[in-house]
Image 1 (tube, one colour):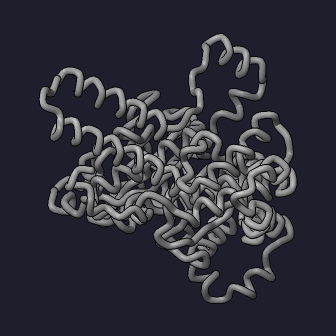
Image 2: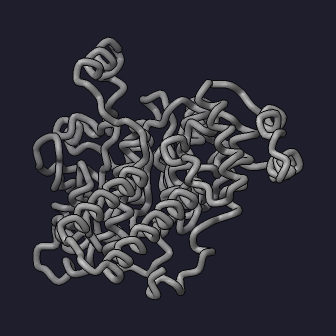
Length: 439
């Protein structure tokens, strides 16, 4: 082995915990395979006995057969060099939570790819260092071929090719397709320009502090919750559940935050039955996990989808507070670029619109015209490329108080992948977290 690579620890190339968790989950919850099948194969496992167990599990899965430790052991009992029955019992005693299988699969898959890269690099270096006559053209061909194969493994083996004829039959034979593929926001002028927000879209809502970014997203969430079948999940990394609940409650009840904060119990008693039912039947779910990762977001969304059939909307508040995808210290702009790309992939993979709130750079405060533009997106990286829609919220009264701009909000449509750009005006009542159409 090349000396350059000798100092790398073999511990970096396997995860015993991940392998055991995945095997135990598949044994106890056979259907969990549906969540991870594109990223696992026998070579994903480092340990020989895990490879053997997984290959037996694959046989059952390929024939669509249910399995447990005894049916697996029945295929292994001829192997006398290892006590598979006791080990299988040990695995299922771990009592796995199936919602975590994606997390551990991601770890295992990344380590598997790392092993492949390591051995490729080692092979390349050996060719360079120990070959007397290096044919650069052949070497480049080998490198290109190996990298291509690794990349295929990295993105998974799922066939994503769809023939146009099949797409036509699939979608347009379903009368409800058009209706269920988009969601209106409840703001007339915005919906006229955007034609609603579409499944698979990444929508960025950005603005400086106090512009009403969270409130605007809550207004959209409240409208969609009241008018569409499936629930909404809000990942709030900045506000607590109580803070968010107060804002949603004041929005629904059309009362000031302070009134609710001041005397919550008395005000709840005075809520009429219709409003109480409206609140109680709300399809909005809130998660306040700090520094949440994309994988955790994906897993929690998948759980709700499993329970309810689908989701209408995912809201991220806010993008820059999502945990880094890598343990390696990277430039923050690079990390945010990775996060925005992952959010677009999340929207596309789950076929659900994702609204991600984003901060803006402080630099715009130095300009005379403080209306934001795309270059003001904080640590923007690839946000502009990944987003399907970018909306900026601007309220001139924050900078220039006058009767003309009181409660006036501009929604600036700076990117619209499938349509026109423009600007709409709304009225904003901050004390109620409420946006309304501008008459």
